[in-house]
Image (tube, rainbow, N blue to C red; front, side):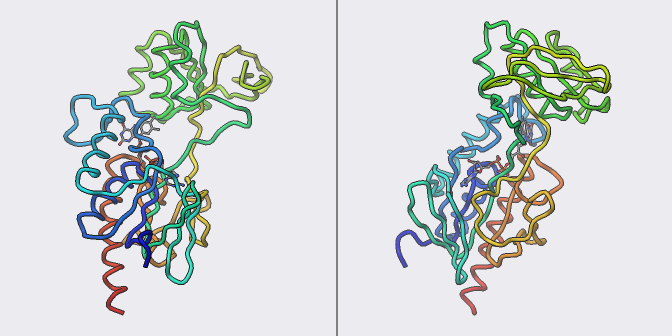
Length: 300
Ligand SMILES: Cc1cc2nc3c(=O)[nH]c(=O)nc-3n(C[C@H](O)[C@H](O)[C@H](O)COP(=O)(O)OP(=O)(O)OC[C@H]3O[C@@H](n4cnc5c(N)ncnc54)[C@H](O)[C@@H]3O)c2cc1C
């Protein structure tokens, strides 16, 4: 077999992928991990909550960097590039990276997370927030969950005004976030309000909002940030695999998908918690079960 052949190929370098790579390496598997964002979505976390042991307001970027460096130091093999495609033929997984290079493996873990749903027109990312500093900008954040709350709080540091627009009057965010939003003077919470349209040539310039159908009004905004839901990041998968109606990868109790040897970990999986802790736990378990699968393979 060529140098580009591995026991385990991992797609993703977020909490789930990093942990899989760390455990894969420790389990003695020849492992390669793809992923262009070390730490994955955790870079969007201002203060990482719900992670035992981290009590001093560690940011997601700090956490992701530390986790990545730890796994790297332990010998985990990261490419820092994406895979364009992953296919499966004759019990072998084949991954083609962005440079067109092929890599093969006997098992694979998909840990590619999920991505926010987007508008048809261009709208900025959270990382564009600092661009509004000192520009007297009004920004709209649409959504009512913890992600929407964190977006609003982050943007409130650079924008003059943030409108947090929620469709219903039942906020899905936790109590801590609700308190922070209420205390932040430049955030206006607009409940029972729907964004019914948006205008702009290349980017959103104003939005049409409606509290009731007959009560539409236009608001000028400099940017609109969506936290209206997520979709699993599975575009690189060029193989038949069982998914939920929303596209999340279905797994058994050993995190194996319907494709033998293909495992899923973290937010891309059909799970009921989208957290760093559960993504890490999935990553560890997926590597353990991949090793178990490979061991059985050699016994056949
Ligand atoms: C604003 C915000 C705040 C949050 N706050 C918290 C919090 O306080 N506490 C908490 O526990 N959780 C929080 N979360 C959730 C947490 O960030 C996620 O649950 C966690 O990052 C999921 O990890 P993951 O590894 O499954 O996926 P991700 O972190 O999304 O990582 C996916 C990885 O896949 C890579 N990738 C994608 N496509 C490919 C491809 N084709 N080939 C190779 N690699 C690919 C990406 O580069 C990335 O490295 C928050 C999320 C957001 C958005």
